[in-house]
Length: 341
Image 1: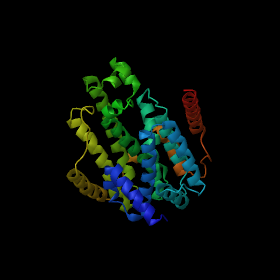
Image 2: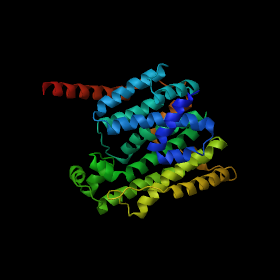
Image 3: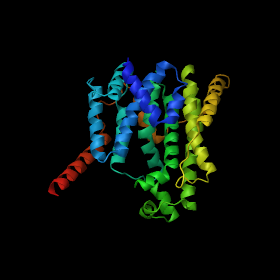
Image 4: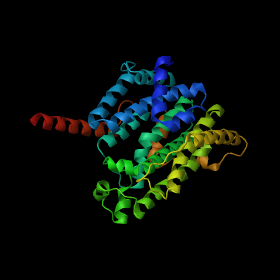
């Protein structure tokens, strides 16, 4: 399906860029691991180009063109793009899912801030839960209840990332905590970005975000029990490796500004072993009723797209088009200003 040399490139990209996923992927069966590595490599390249590029709007627009080419079966001549085009064809990947990721990256390109926890979940749905839904597609799982729990896991992982990176993001001029939390605490965002410090108020916000992540990690577990048996250890490993980062933050007093939480190789190995045990245990105990919990409002569109591809819209959704139009206008304005200078 995927050219072996392209797959090797994807594997190297993940090994260097996402230690937690690379560790977890070792427990996935090859039939899932290989396309998953290709998917994560494409997403990682996309994310890095927007995060670290000097012109974020142009980077997002270039990604739009790359996705167009991949779905047309004429990918750009790059390993991650060729691999992505192959898995789109083989797995009938609903276009709404990578489009949702692109929309989230476009929000990053616009340096959008999020007024409420629901808005942060909506962002997390696009940049992380969409990947969880795509992983289910790679496992040939399209049951709505399982998809909803996969999206819970994706949102939880992204909330953990946000909690971990508060200081790093602030020093880069980025802010992902709910702005209404700052207003409630009487804090000014611009002042915080100019001099980020782990004040008691900021620590409480990190604690609140991790509490929401923890709730969603637990909600995700009945969904893992519905996945193919061979895939369960790898997904449990991803769940525990990311949750362990939250544990490190908690032990640091919720200070993610003066230090950045990480897990050691030895800790990861222990989590991999525990994940294998947990994957076996879910086949013994009765199915949790949490599997029937409604999907988060913010991820419902992803569940619908993956569960019912025949009902999915074709082409770009209106919200994606609107965001990209704004980016294009901003890109043109910047170009005009540069030319005038």
